[in-house]
Length: 474
View 1: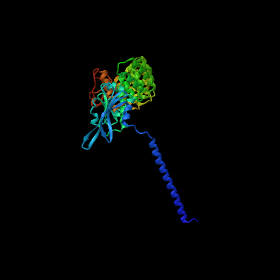
View 2: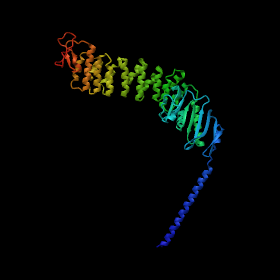
View 3: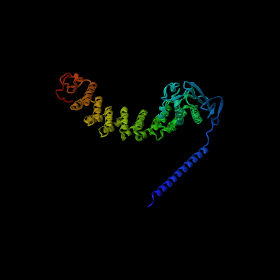
View 4: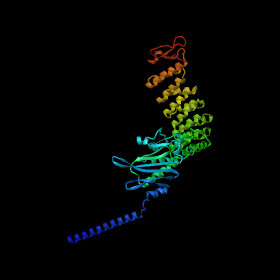
């Protein structure tokens, strides 16, 4: 058996070995770190960075944090750049102040001004006017922007410009006013690398905002090329407010042919007759909101050709789309659609659709429609019954009063009230009644009683507190 002294000696040797390995590893790590530092290129001094951008170092400098910061001016990406750095005394001591100005040669057009959303009164001091909405939620939530023309402002805010403006306005103190980008705040002077990066961003943004290209073409470019669908629709909306030019017409044709229905449908609607085939396709194949928009656009265009396409959407599997088609056909008084509308009213489709169809056929003086309305007076769906009662009130005849009085018995309060209103509407429309027909009592407003015109002179209305006998036929 091994002695305790030997075990102790062995453990000591292992511990020494472990310690040696740890020391060697630490030395190696330190050497590697030092080597990497030596290999890393040193940051260029500010004057070298400035010259690389095209800035000129001017006189008049201040000592800040042991670094001599110069004033600079020059041209970056064709933009006028001015850098002023100074200090001003406060009760806590000297505070650094940076004054940066970047602008295109002719200034930023359209009186554009921008600042950070929710930045406080200091950030809003130069902002006046409504906050123009681009449709880019992230941008709109962050940046307040306006100008003398909504279309002009939106036209300049393509994807890259919005990205640059978010970057710049996200930095404390940056604003756009007076045709230039400004930063004038009291804070720590940025490091040379940060300062140069800010100037590069500001110069590119200034360059893009300073474009004097026509608003129309910029809106077209945004409408066709932006990655944000909401921004594209916003630019399309502004384009449609402008006088139509060949360029706009061509752009609308391109937009109407796109797979994105949110762009294709309004563009097709704006094309008039040329957009009908695309609208018809959208009415049958697009998601519900865009299909409904297509049906309404077809209806607005009018004409037999669009009528044919709207009739076709009555077979749509989307009830909301069919409801839009039903409303359009009813407004047009398209008698050729009555059989299909009657079929929908009697069908087992959704209650909202069937009710819409019942209201639609109530607008036609057609015996088929009248027969269908009487048939669904006792439908299981309350919405359908109410729609049928409403339609009979508009188009019903004296004989329908008996039916309306019958369904009132044992019906829910809403149905009873609708039946009374329908009878009153029929009475008001038809005037005097024939002997033996049911008429509305004078006190119906409070009692709802119905009575029968019996031996009274022709055309007279009989008054009763309650109904005491059955109608004597028609």
